[in-house]
Length: 115
Image 1 (spheres, rainbow, N blue to C red):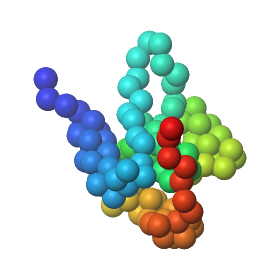
Image 2: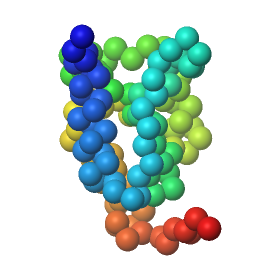
Image 3: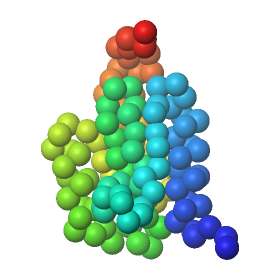
Image 4: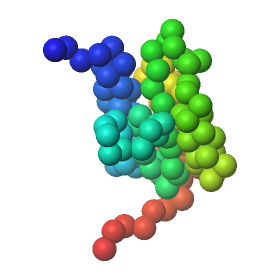
């Protein structure tokens, strides 16, 4: 069975984010299932020390965020992270670029290396 259109879109967005973020990005896809929480954003990441959650929607469904999805997106913002609904790779990368500007460019503050 071929992947659903939204699944294909998630893959494209994840690829673009990974290409932009390189070693400054940790990203994973939340897979829904009977033992996973509902409404958690599709893509969870840490970019240059900032928590980011992105809910992926097909362009025609961008405004159709469920109540529980909106709760999680707003909770991330209230906690100091970034969250958004994205409908294409360019929107996702634009969020990382905005973070680059906020954090002082790609060279930004130094990060501690893992021991």
